[in-house]
Structure formats: structure tokens, C-alpha cells
Amino acid sequence: MKILKFGGTSVGSADRIQSLLDIVNPSERQIVVLSAVAGTTNALVEISSAFLNGKKEEAKELIIDLKEKYEQLIHDLFKTDTGRKQGKELIDYHFNLIASLSNDLFTPTEEKIILAQGELLSTTLWHFHLSEKGIPSVLLPALDFMKIDEDNEPVIPYIKEKLEQLLAQTPDNTLYISQGYICRNAFGEIDNLRRGGSDYTASLIGSAIQADEIQIWTDIDGMHNNDPRVVSTTKPIAELSFDEAAELAYFGAKILHPQSVFPAQRYKVPVRLLNTLDPNAKGTLISERGGPAGTIRAIAAKDGITAIHIHSSRMLLAYGFLRRIFEIFERYKTPIDMITTSEVAVSLTIDNTSNLDDIVREVEDFGRVSVDLDQTIVCVVGDFSANRHGYAARVLDAIKHLPIRMVSYGGSDYNVSILLDNEHKIEALRSLHNRIF
Ligand code: ADP
Ligand code: ASP
Ligand code: MG
Image (cartoon, protein in one colour):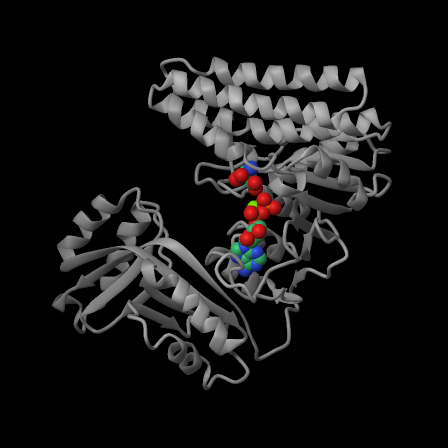
């Protein structure tokens, strides 16, 4: 069985939704995971924030605007009266639900219900479209099997059990459809896997049922060797190892949700990144094997990084110091991305600043603390294991005209990370690209 995930632009218009059948062969056994129609989740975020801020009129207008787009979409998508009627009832149902949440007690729980409507809409619309064309398909409701625990971690054994039960109900069916991004949390409430989470859904489903392959269909022909939004001469990478892909996704390559590689790696399911707009392009294969040894593979950048510098003479010749520092971050459930140390100082970076003030207050017990906001981690990924000398020098040489805040090298065999002020990101990406590729 294969898992095919289509992102927002791949279902972004009636035309695109119709063209899914150019790629999906309904008689092959597969689960198709869909994101919301492009722009929908952003619009739902805006509607929720208007509700949160008590701006009901603004929310109402945003809801009307979004609903109009869907009215046009069903007009273009369906050819029969029955199809149009079904489509109209569907969007009425979802938009009435969204509008009904405008009570005065609008909490993150209501917000998550609103954010879930995009994927519920796109999957049901496609299911109706297929049925209008006489093509059988079965909807697998993600809210019935996709589950996260108290730490927002997916519960794979549960997902596997529920999914297998659902699949067993229709043994002769071949084409299954499910929603990306949405799930239930430990309290049974509607929740989500964070922005871009449909990739993660596909990877979790593929891992849970031990699929043959997970295909991520998007609007570009695979993972490129630099950010195509910043550098104009990027190229697709034919093969990546799971570790390299995870590193790139985590450090900013937006084509993949940061966590989506881990389940596939753990359950050894290959992931292919493919282009809906050019289905015959080779794309990128992510597997245990990876690409040719000893080459630099790609550059990525992750914005919104905060650096915390701790200077303390108590660290000198002491043991247990780092553990106590790390425990503070652990208590506030704040992951650390990069770390560098000297004998009397330690610097580290985080991207989740929701507990920054508390963390800084506690870390101040250990020494002098300073914080840099608006930082960017630029990350160079490749196989540095075979022939170690020269790589770090090439990387640093390419950005020697820029002020570097931190450098991390040697933590793994496939990553050099550099911290800079965000204002230098574009120049760093371009200069590294010119010198390395
Ligand atoms: P989808 O809606 O299909 O999930 P995304 O917008 O999340 O698509 O991801 C695809 C986009 O990721 C591309 O259009 C591209 O601009 C961006 N991107 C950023 N870095 C990379 C990279 N290294 N390789 C490919 N695409 C990248
Ligand atoms: N629709 C969600 C988002 O825009 C999930 C996804 O596209 O992967 O973040
Ligand atoms: Mg995405």
C-alpha cells in the first residue's frame, strides 16, 4: 500500500482537484492524505484571531470572504445538480459551524476546531467529486484514529490499531482518503500537528501500517539544495538519507514538516518528494541509503531563533553545571537547537520562546545572562564523514564577510550550523550557494 499526500496548492483550485486523477490511479490500493485548499488554513487562523480579540464583525466578514471562495470552487468542481447540492450542503455545514463558535468564551479549544475545518472540507469535496464521476472511495476520518498524547507526541500503536480496524471494514475498497494535519489530543479534543502538519500525517499513517512508500506531492520537484525562495539557481536533490532530510526539514526547508521524517525513518518506509505540476520529474527519494558519500548536499535556514548566553566563572572546572542548566529548559519543555561552550560560558539557542522570561530568570542564578532575538540558524548538510578536512573551512570562508554569532560542527557527521543575525540570512544563503555548489 502507498500513501500519497497532496499539499495546499495541489488541491488549490477546481482544476487542480480534478487533475489529482492524473496522478492517483483509483484501482491501486492507497491512502490519499489531503491538506486544506491553499490559503484556507491562513484564513482560518485570521478568523480565530479575530474571535480571540473579540472582533466579531471582522470575523464575520472574513468568514463571508472565505465562504465565497468555496462557493466558486463547488460551482467549478461539480458538473451535476446532485454534486452541486451536496457541495453546497457541505460548505453550509462547515461555515455555520465556524460562525457558531463566535461565543464570548473563545478559547484555544474552539480555535483548534476552526483550524480543522479546512482539511475536513477538502477531503469531503474530493470524495464527492469522485463519487460524481462514479469512482468509489472511502473517507477515513483522521479524528477517529490520529492521536497525540499529553506531550503532543503521536501515539503510533493507537493509530495503527484504529486505522487497521477502519481499513478492515471495507476490504475490497482500493482508494482511501484522509485529512492531513488534524488529530485528537490526550483529552479527546480536536487538535492538530502544527502548521504544515499534513506531511507528518502521511508519514505517521505510512509508518503505522508499514506502507511501501510515502509520497509527498507538492508544488516543486523535490528537496532543493537551497531555499528556492531566496536563491534562484537551486537544484533538486535526487537522494537523501533520513538523517539529512530530517536535518534539512528541522532547519527550515519548508517543503517538509520538521518532524515528518522521524516515523518514516524509524519504521523504514521510504519517502518520495514529488511535483504535482510536473508528475514525471524524478523528485527526491529519502531512504536509509541517501546520496553519494562525501558530498555537501544542501543549505537551509531557520528563522525566529533566540540565543541565550550564560557567562559564569562557577563553570570553571566544575561538573554538573550543564545538567542543571539543561534541567531548566526541560522543566519548561523548551527544546534546545544549538549549543556551544567554553570553560566559563555556554551559549544555546531555542525557537520556542513561550517561557523565555521564566527560563532567563532561573538561568540568572548561574551567572550573567544575555539574550539575542531575531537570529537565524543557517545549516549546511552533507556527508562529512568520509573526508573531514576542508568542509568547515569552505563553509566559514563563504561567509567570512558576515558577523557570525555561533558555530556548531562535529555534533554529527552531516551538519555544520551557524548562527547569525536574521538580517544577514539572505546574503549567507546566497554566498554559501555560490561558493559550495
Ligand atoms: P505544500 O502546501 O504542498 O505542503 P509547502 O509550501 O509546505 O507545500 O512546501 C513547498 C514549498 O517549500 C516550495 O514551494 C518552496 O518554496 C519551499 N521550500 C523551502 N525550502 C525548500 C527546499 N530546500 N526545497 C524545496 N522547496 C523548498
Ligand atoms: N493546512 C495545514 C497548514 O496550512 C496543514 C498543511 O498544509 O500541511 O498548515
Ligand atoms: Mg507543507
